[in-house]
Image (cartoon, rainbow, N blue to C red; front, side, top):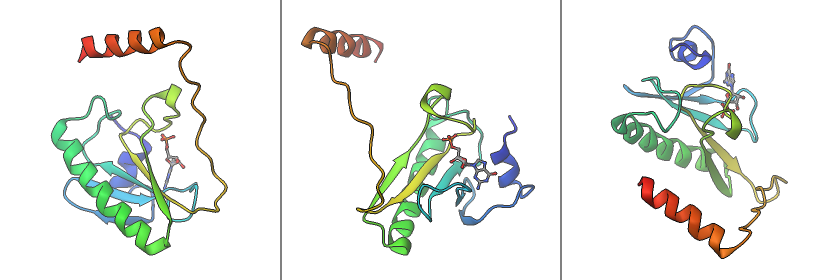
Length: 135
Ligand code: 5GP
């Protein structure tokens, strides 16, 4: 499956590469939330996290930690968000598994979404039970 990220890995589209090993590639996002915002991707294609091979996930999450530590140190960030958008409804635009590593600053003005809670304890129990049955 070819996406813009396969072309970036292949060097057909330029990028600001910050890390590469045998299995993983990391580069700066072209539209950063904050400077230093990077994307960490496996070279092995999968659409997202849910269809990725376990081995690929181990490789990529280990690189995410390494890259996040470097970004935090290099930018002096107060915190880091690791974000993985899974599917169009969740904001995924590029269908090649990627983790956003976003340096965050106490005064950067971004906010998380606010939870909407459960309508009742029964609703919470019911959804938990459905998930447990699938697991
Ligand atoms: P998604 O919404 O799929 O989780 O995030 C895709 C990310 O890829 C976006 O943050 C977007 O800015 C970034 N992106 C899309 N095209 C390019 C590109 O050609 N080069 C780089 N460096 N980043 C890209």
